[in-house]
Image 1 (spheres, rainbow, N blue to C red):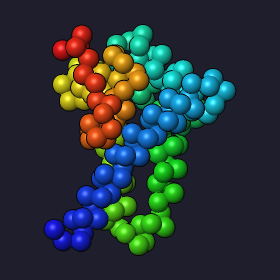
Image 2: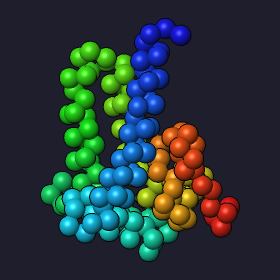
Image 3: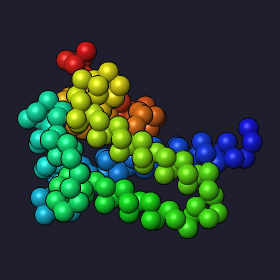
Image 4: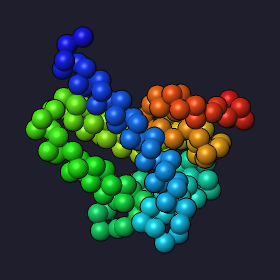
Length: 159
């Protein structure tokens, strides 16, 4: 396999690992503290999704003057982009894969919470996290690291 393909593949794996780690330890770990910046995920997004069967009206429109779960999520994603800018100069395909993964994450996550029926067909693992056990199924874009870490748990009730 040529070096560029390896670089891109490693970028995809790195992004999926980062998604898993961020969701499990930051959004759920630090986010349980109501006074944490990360509380938006647990106390806003999860609460709304639980009440509305995955639907989160906060994703319907983007208003950058409103500080809600969507704008906080976009701020975090922009921060991740900025953290990797210098790396882009050295490993453009690796970093490009990270950036592509961030865009795919945002697209899929937003679509899942605007169209729960779509999510149940295309992001089953994310529905299992939101509607089943929220102590597993940490990945959104694809469940690779959930399988690797043994945290992909299928919710029998949703099947």
